[in-house]
Length: 170
Length: 95
Image: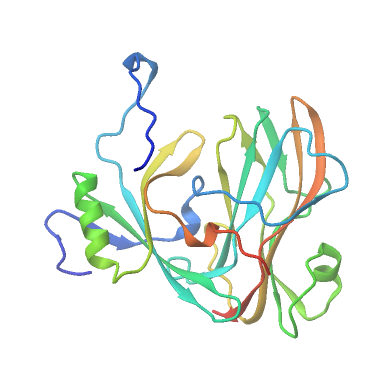
């Protein structure tokens, strides 16, 4: 890009994981032991290589209709927003499979709370989170989040959300 | 024709402005055949106007899909305001 409008623009590569809000949401796969009472939904992007992060990342977004709501990812209410790499075969998309298969490796986590104060706004988390390098390895990549909501309609979930699986390396 | 919802407003319902926000441009390149994903390349730009950013993004894209955001920081953290394009990694995909 050097030389392009340099007098007007100052451009430099940045790390995607620095970002905390934004993006277009979509629902991949969600299962609940109990109803999601605060009308929250999670959408986990297909893991992909980010040159800014220097490795594989996945972006997760949460939206809640009922606010203010706190979405908790941390144990014991949740199991975190986790990035997994399975090295032998495409995994079954269950948290138990990922945790129990010795060929599925844990490649990053975000267990921070999400404070949703604006109805239907998009709240973003990355895994691995900002400040950590993107993940590396070869195989089948998938992101998984187990989370609960605490809001005006009570306690929702726990809810398990998955990204699509991507076979690749980075 | 794109449908727009245009209506007049009272301008006094905002509390702050950012005259020249930093911009973020994310380019995407398809990777993988059977289970494709979109590799991303992220840039930050300081420019006087978004039209310059859009022109830079178009000139730099090499026909790659791209998204242009304004980067905004507040007490609750940093965030992105989408100005142009959409993230192909956010498209629904069946496994």
